[in-house]
Amino acid sequence: MKAVRVMVLFAAAGFFVLFSPWTKNAVPFFPMMTITAAFLAAASLIPERNPDIYAFKFKFVPLGLLAAACLYLLFWIGHFVSIRILPFAASQVESIYTIRAGQNPWLIAPLLFFVIGPAEEIFWRGFVQRRLSKRYGVFIGFVAAAAIYALVHVWSFNLMLIAAAALCGVFWGVLFVLTNNLWPCMICHAVWDVVILILIPVK
Picture 1 (cartoon, rainbow, N blue to C red):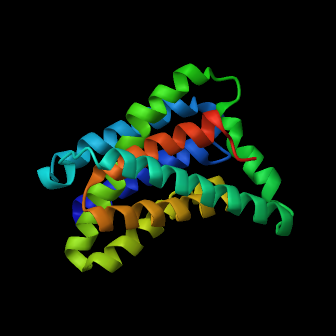
Picture 2 (cartoon, one colour):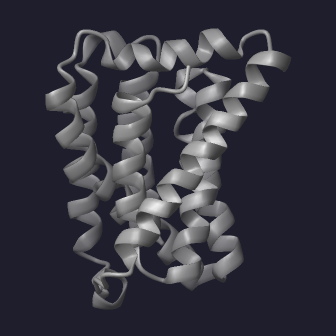
């Protein structure tokens, strides 16, 4: 478990730099996020090699696409409801999208699709959730991984972002438990990132 603690602390430090009000304007978000996610994924593959969870099947493509569509729908519904009952929701959601201000979407989209989305799944589900599940059982491992994934976003002090991370952590965590494979999670995460951040923002 030492490896999990060390890697999660590194992830928390990286997310602090990316999201905290004291540091976020000092670093370019997408290059920094790409480097952080890629490092975490690469480092987690060293102690956690399991070909079973990386075995590709064609059925994972439509499953991942369907999951991405379902997650987007959940976010659309959540946004529709939240901006009507929470006075701060609209401004906090709008602030999330400032990370793409002035950025070329044709450069951001490939980073999200090919690196950030898949790398996050390799680390959070393939390493953190899997290690915790092996140690404490599937349910506790899933809950703990989803909670940690949400908590590393706390540096943003943005309740909507933290809630979004919690929902994503639960959604992708369940998908990983049901399939015991990272491909549906990676496809879902990659497609959803591009759609919600670039193609059809929810705001």
